[in-house]
Length: 322
Image (cartoon, rainbow, N blue to C red; front, side, top):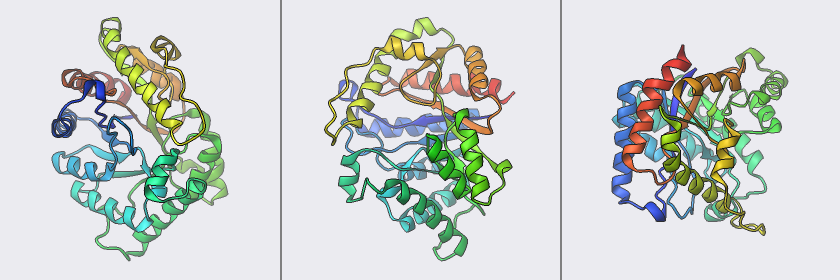
């Protein structure tokens, strides 16, 4: 398996730093990870979060592309229904050219009403709209209608679908499935077959909730506070714009106890050796080509983030590649 790092550029009120420094430091972290040999760097998207969650991942990816040399650069995910297909196709092509052909385009449906209201998009039709964007983007690139073209002959598109129905939809499209959940292999391959694609072409990649460290008990008190914020933030913003109440604050100890999953509601804090074994056990024989891990949990200090970057690249990644 290849190994990546995942960034969302949060700047929480409780740990707020200068915005320019946050962005310049994240570029430095990406450069360092690239220099050390990380396989990929991934960027997420949200809007109207009170911590300034990265709103435009392809814009930031272009800056990363100009500052790195070898790592692949991915969106995990770009909220597809918020933008016209032509816009995504053109912007992705520019990033691919700037990077010399290193872009992976991950598309997702989104789920927050305020984001759809902000862009004047329909949340009710988001699944069909996301499927349509993938088809239209691929058609634009195949036709050569939009110039300039991407650097890659077939720029990888990944569908950020997490349930069985979504995995089947990704298969129908013949695109990659942006999930490392082995339970989705069967519906994904069934979708590939139903869509006229070779089921042996199945390819998966995704985030796993792992924080490697040489001393889990030493680091847990500090990691715990950022885990608490990150989970409470997701849960609070998840219900925004709905009639659902704000969920109760999380218990970080319960989050840690759940161990490794593909969601944000758990965290495996372990040595690189234990983490690698758990990742291999979790993934099993699923066709997962890439797994990526948080480079930072919201509001972490720079020295903690850089230590995580180096631990993932130098200590965990070699074990997973082997």
